[in-house]
Length: 212
Ligand code: 3PG
Image (cartoon, rainbow, N blue to C red; front, side):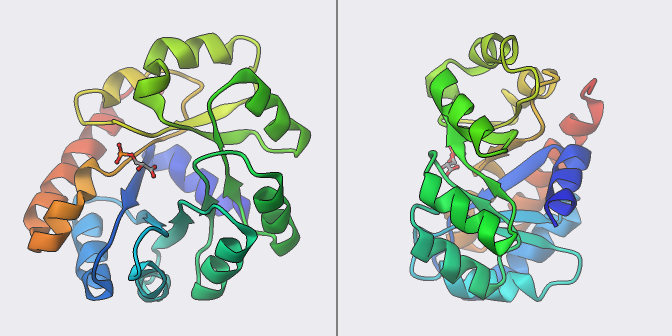
């Protein structure tokens, strides 16, 4: 199961991070993303609508929907029950990653330091969210971490834009870049699906041009 999402991230190199306020926006959002070339979404468990949105997206053919901002084992259970096919955390929780392993659900915990990467390695995890990427030192920081941790594959997230995308995607240690810029809450709240599609297509085009 974990191959599905990592293979897709390796292929498209993008992970849209969604903060959704109305579950009814889930389907038009999925259509807007697909129109721009992406069939992957991380729905953050930060809003009351998140669970219903995951449920709706789990029914969309060929879409891989995961849950983000997963902080507890209760969140893991709720998200998997709603149909999430992967789990993302902002930080490293042994409880969260152990629960995901028990359920057989791929998990991408957040790391911000060498010690956290070593902890993740001890749990057998190599694909890690690097969060918050820009604030932690961005591209030079990932380059420095990739030297001792040659096996780590990072999903840098936090502060990303189309402008920062090429430099991150040029790093072999970067599996995919995560971010909310192409699915910003203000676009969803306004129902501006054309702009979601435009920003998604722009990111997809940049990812295709990237050397890795
Ligand atoms: C996350 O949960 O991954 C972040 O909130 C996404 O960061 P961004 O909004 O800066 O892209």
